[in-house]
Image (cartoon, rainbow, N blue to C red; front, side, top):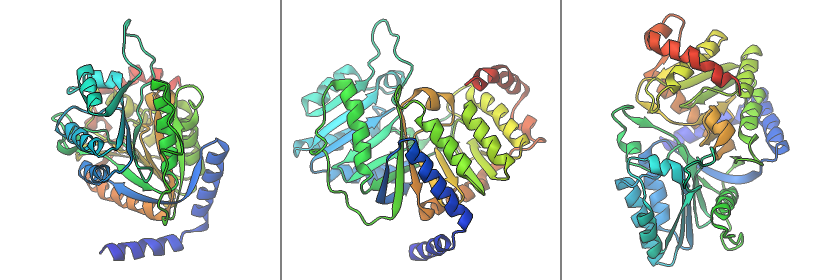
Length: 406
């Protein structure tokens, strides 16, 4: 069956229309002009569930020979988090270097946080755990948080996407039900870029410079994916992510599909979506009816209604909480990463997305989108008041002006 699917995808790729190839050329050129590095000959493995991510990533980490670098927004000190830490501990005994970065503010707000005592215990066994931007007296920190999800193993594998580390990715929560998400494993020259991003943040937090030659491997090639990496950081790279999303939307000539948990948008992205609709691009956005945070559903409802009125197809996913951050363009290119389509991600936090120029990977994501439509409701003028009660609609309208300023 896999062979048949692969053949079908190859045939689809071979018959790709010229307008779709045009979107690829336009976006690659624009991302390069923005300063985003591009890498050839990579291999992408999509990991559309926590079970697949954990199985794949934990196995590779358990086979690490030289080093493992991990950078996470949230890493719960629960059974999944401790399982990963135990695997890392076993590798340390074999001489593998392990460095861990976790966002401090988010960790402190976690139901199952890592404490300073935990960090000391881990350092005693050889795992260097560092908290990003320590939350100290007078308890006022920079607004930017480290929303990266990066794992690099021996310079041969890199992992990124929407998933942190925690049990709820496997079990869901009482509030959201089943948790849906998307991650990816990368092989090839692009792995070096994720190591460089990790090393840069690590140096800012610790002062330690990681030798780029020592923490490098000759990556296995053989893949066909071209990948551009867009990294957003406070200060010098602050505009990168929203500029990349705008470029992707402006490059589209036929269809854009988006799955994202928080589509409240910033002004530049909102305008790019409207431009796409105006020139006849089919824009399809999938968001979740159930959410893990308050207020956002109300804000997003008003934003989605405005887009729906302009011709966008908005689908509310009913099968749990869809936390994936995915966009596909014209069936030939896609992006998967950490960035949400809200002000938090596009104006403040550290984010990283891989823009993948590969029709086969894009087709796999589009197939998942089509499958998820079976558990989704199309937003219409008739059902808007049914999906959102009067209180939610009022809150959304009152608060929306604060989000349209950016």
